[in-house]
Structures are given as C-alpha cells and as structure tokens.
Length: 268
Image (tube, rainbow, N blue to C red; front, side, top):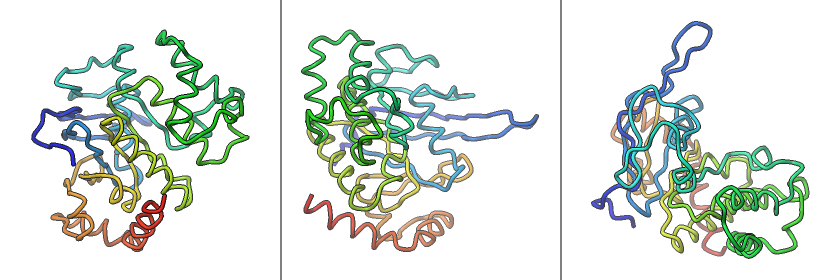
C-alpha cells in the first residue's frame, strides 16, 4: 500500500482544459485536482467524454492546459516538457497496434527511445526489456501484425519502461483485450510496480480493472472529479455521491468480472 502521507509523486492542481469547436468553447476538464503518492496506482474512471484521457494527456504534455499546473516530485512542470520530464513520465496508449509503427520491428520500436536519450548497451537493454514483460528474444525482429494483441501491449509497456521512468501513464491499456489476456497484463503491471516501485495513473471505463489494480479511484463526469474512492469503498458500493452510486450500479457484472480477474491472476 502506498504511503498517502508522503509527499506526492504527481500532483494535479486546479487543472482546466478548454477547446474551441465550431465557434463554441468546450470545457473538457474543469478545476481538477488530485495527488498520487509514490508507488501508488491511482485510477480515473468515467464515461466516454468525461475528460479522463484529457487529464492524462495533459500530465504527459500531449495536450496544453488552459490553466492549472502539474507537479512531479514537488517540481512544477513547464507547459513544454523537456527531455528529462518525458523520460520520467512514460505513456502507454489504448491501442498498441495503433501506437506501434506497422513497418517497424519490435527491435526498432525499443531501440528508438534509447537512441534519442543516448543510452549505451542498447542490445542488452532491448533483451532485458523484452524479458521484463514476458517476451522472448524471438519476438525481437517481428512486426506488430505478427504479434497477438496481448504481445503488442507487452511491447508497448516494454517501450515505456525501457528508459526506467518514475511513473507510467496508462490510457485504457487493457480495453481491447479479452478477460484472460487482461488478467495477464494486469499481473504484469502489478509485478512491475512491485519490482520498480512505479507510480501509475490508470485511466479506464472498466470498474473491474481499477478495482483489481488501483488503491484509489477518481470518478469523473463532464470534466470534473465527482469524488475519490478507495478500492474498498468501490467494492463495497460505498460511493458518497448520487452519480458515483449510479455509475457503480450501471456497471452490472462489475463484481463478477472483478472476481473473474482475481481468479485468473491468482493463478497467473
């Protein structure tokens, strides 16, 4: 369990994001604040369009905020991330097939960030990264279309981890996978978190996934955080707001899926 009394690893303070679309303003994120403790996996859930992925992209520096600030280790990040910031905060996208270049081998996908950051011993780093995510040396020179969905997501996670970041930003990384493969990826993320003391923010619409992996969960609606629950409160249907209770009630089968994931991961 992460020490929530410790200084936050990632802090989001009064974040707002406004887009202009067809001449009108869209308030995608409104006054969002939260802090993630070192080593914690913090979940953000909500319906499509709730703003959860936008928050993650702002933290990564992929979307510019209208107002508010992001701090990492007590240091406020500049709107334009420098190389050290990008190395520290690594992003795993929802669709690994889309995020991996179809004409690049696994070796090339893993080698590129090492070249950008001037990392030595690149062959050894690539082989180690593959082993860390449960892939073998034989996968190294395959193309994305030659891999299964679970294998592609393992490559995406290996690419994020190859620079030894302090935090992972995970944007629905299991949503395209079936339950058994989801469990494998969740097992992998849980193990990597233990081994590397990783801090993570996990965005998803799937309550079973956050119940299995996260310690606290923020519920978003229309760009705002409605409430933050512990995983025990989520499983006990102890939401304090009407919307939180509605979201849990609407996710019928959430408890059964949570139990299914637990059953698979216990034997994973």
